[in-house]
Amino acid sequence: MARVLINHGWTNQRPTEHWQNIAATALRRAGHQVQYPQYPQTEMPVFEHWQHLLLAELQQQIAIGEAAGERIVIAHSLGCINFLLAAQSGLITEPIDRLLLVAPAESSRLAELPDFQFDLSDSRLATSLQAAAKSVTLLGSDRDDWNPSGLQASFGNALQLEAVIIEGAGHLALGDGWGQWRGLIDWVNDPAANLTIR
Image (cartoon, rainbow, N blue to C red; front, side, top):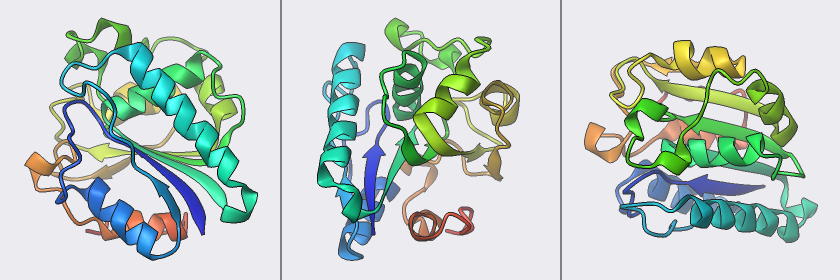
């Protein structure tokens, strides 16, 4: 059993057919403690509100207690940036066990959200992330409009991570046909599982 926090991205209203919703339901049925909050004002996110909710949800994970298993965070797109900015600011004081960053969005695609701008050239990024999460997996696609520089060239190199690439998966969003994701559910149960399996 694990304590799992799923963080959605920009404009996501948590539709039932999205992989996040499907995974939350499946993981709960399997006995995991799953938090899948709706972040406020998802059409035009306010940075302070998103940071506040993230930190509150992380504290809730802690409050559930160690008997509920390891702490896992799964973040997508802007949800990744929200977590990375909290880590960079030193706000995550008790590291989680595992972090999955799915298709983080580059700052060039977040011009409408200046408070979520993220400097990948900051040499302290990798160290900050290592302090916030004991294990980090970076995953995305080779064809993601939200990451025009390429996942490895942008986030992978900056965070000192080898990205897991799923060919042709777009932004791993519902609009890309990304619904059922068996590999993700398997990964929660076993960190060695193949995340690329649909």
